[in-house]
Length: 133
Image (cartoon, rainbow, N blue to C red):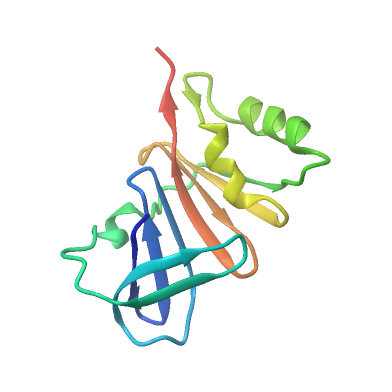
């Protein structure tokens, strides 16, 4: 990720496979990421071109939901539970789950959008699933 987009009091960031968003009080616009730390983000206003249509990416076709908590102590067992929970022809890049560590997440499956949607109290994410062939 090199930049973020702020609209409707929410900050959006994507790398093409994941979309993360959270509430913010910052002014609307595009921002360049100056420094990315584990718990903070340093940004400055910038013209980043056209940000992807994030509204089109957020699924509404929820198939099922469950609660998952990812931490260092339960990473393997929770990842196994999540993988078993997905349909048989779907998989997830486990590296993408690292952004979800340390919080309780309600995870929903959106089959038509081929993704999972994760919601915590303050953060949200859409993660694209992989097809197993």
